[in-house]
Image 1: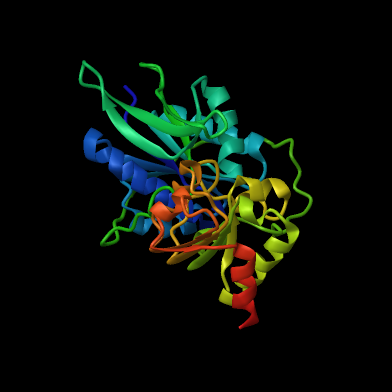
Image 2: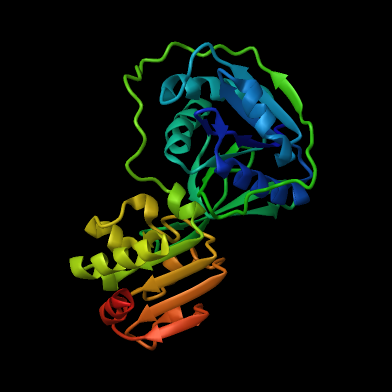
Length: 326
């Protein structure tokens, strides 16, 4: 019988990604009800270093496969190894970061295992069947972010596999370091049909917006080029990251990795200043944990003022221009 909550320990350049600690938080939430053990799977040339980094995440078991070469970006080989690992450890659920790597690798894993895969979850809840068994309610926005749906894996179909968006759970940190049980599995990575010719850092990524203390957010009111220039100058003056709603992404002013909301990222900055954001639920779900929220909008009835600590009713171009003059 499948048992256990499995977390994919995504890593890059020898470091466990921050989102892994967020998935462990979700796993501990599930464990409170199901009492299952929390497991992590690690695939790397240097498993020892990565395992050492997971000491404060309070996982019960770590399953590792040591590869002869770096499998980064070789998703065909990596997915084959992980599928074999999951077959062997037989977890009831698998939590995966909704990152480029997580999506690419685990779509292949799901196909190999013949199981479902729910993408981009923003909330995981535990349900109980009449026979006393548990299942995961996989909540996510859908249909162009207009509805919020709950997806449930068919009874008896394991593992329940889902990707979880970065930022929706607070990173887990145990009060004291715990030494998990480590098991190395005798699984060999097949030869990859992908050849990595060169690695370059991304021109932009979500790290700056997820880690920023101050985030300036632009909405539909900043779609004009002149308005966005003012917004950027304002953000630069505060040494702040720039985020936005979907319309700002559609204009090309910011990359998708800086979109905030149910179809983007969830952020927890110390200060968030929004300009021209109406305040639709699809967006505000991504900023609800902001410590100090300031909103500027010319519509005094805008829903954004319902969640803002301070609100300014006025033309954002005038307000930004006057601030920058000083």
